[in-house]
Length: 362
Image (tube, rainbow, N blue to C red):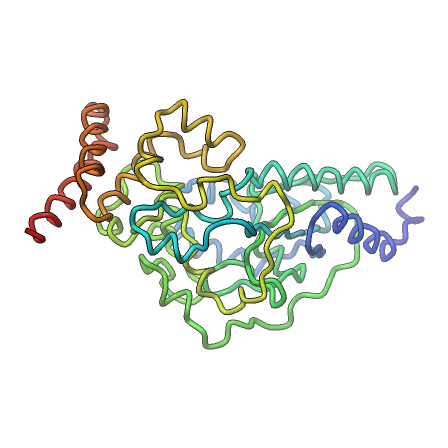
């Protein structure tokens, strides 16, 4: 089928239907003019808010200029897929129990990169079956793509004060994915206005004050960055505020009023792997590396590796009520990792903190 013979309005309707059949909750199409967002990105990078995430600045303007990343791109298809597990322990209960470790709800099931990428490839294959070969490339948080800006332009929602996409009918508990394409599809309508209004719940709730101003996040202060992206030592000034959050942080979403409209996912790949929805810190801290790798197989958690896993849990144990079991576990790891300066630093911090807590209670 030649380009001239394609009815792009009809094709978009079919693509939307196919996307729903593949498990996506919404699909939109945007053009590739991201000039407004490019300036915001450059200002954010210039301020150093990306911390150790050097990949955010590594590719020049490719992130904000889709046609430079994939030649011939004229449209971007954006999709969203709900991920909130229906069967997991309530986040508030886990966060309120210092003996347990909180893992961001997005990471409780299978790695979303794999799930989303496979579905987007199937969607692309459907399009090719319909019209023949066309130019495209699939992305799921895997290349220099300004996915939130593209999702906002495609009408999937608006960028909230916490920098996540919010949908008025679905909240913010969803993943994003994109197809860059040379098909001149009709552009879908962008959300006409930002609906955060005067609400500052996410700013007020953030444990480490990472949302330094509306729509501006200093990643270096963010618990998700500290527990996942940061490779070295977690700054001492943030450790107490981390509480029992050992992989990511959902506080800015948990408090968002729009999430009263969110729906649990029906996608079984995102269902919680027990006991990760409400694990005890001591159980997780006792995993050796083979156990960690086995229990996180196919999970996004595996990317941080066993050392950073233990680092994060050591901080959480230091924030827990002092007990003989916790102190013994920390001392055992201290002996095991006495040559690992980074990990040893966090274990020593936890032991010192627990020692001070015990001294105050005596």
